[in-house]
Image 1 (cartoon, one colour):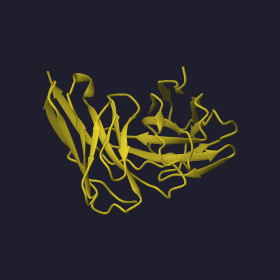
Image 2 (image 1 turned 120 degrees about the vertical axis):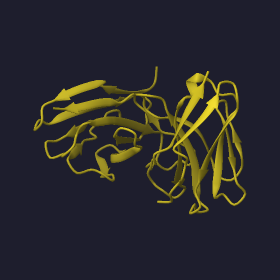
Image 3 (image 1 turned 135 degrees about the vertical axis):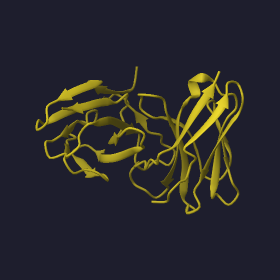
Length: 112
Length: 115
């Protein structure tokens, strides 16, 4: 399985944008990039996913590098509720299951 | 409301006892998964099931067993053979294993403590 590399932790001020990076230099052409986040003592929740083009939804934006070797999850205005561990995960398009292989993620701290 | 329910939220057992964790979903999802999470770490896949009466081992299946007799239920048994069973257990489901735009839905987890 292709691996992802994320910083262990990041800090942000409330109401400021946050850019969470993810490196995936061994990504294959058919791997989707998924992001999940996990609030304390809860199960992970889906945030966003993409393949090649940048993606936007109500929670966040996903910016994917042209060579697809890295991506950035963008929270446009961080709130205290966004304090969580964010996981960047690669999912092979040809995988017949929905196995999600989690790394250790980035712990985001939001300062009031 | 549709969702995925794990019970109980907290579970205590004595060493050497088998224990079964419940996972139920009313989302009509085909696929279900069990993950284990240790403090400060990411999730690791224990077992997954793509269809009723079928399941596959994940990365850390030793000491665990599952069944999938009904589409909506995927119970996990932590057996006495599991060397270090104390952990946070998470169940998930997804709509279809073949769909490219699926997301997984997770339950709120069961925190198992073995003393």
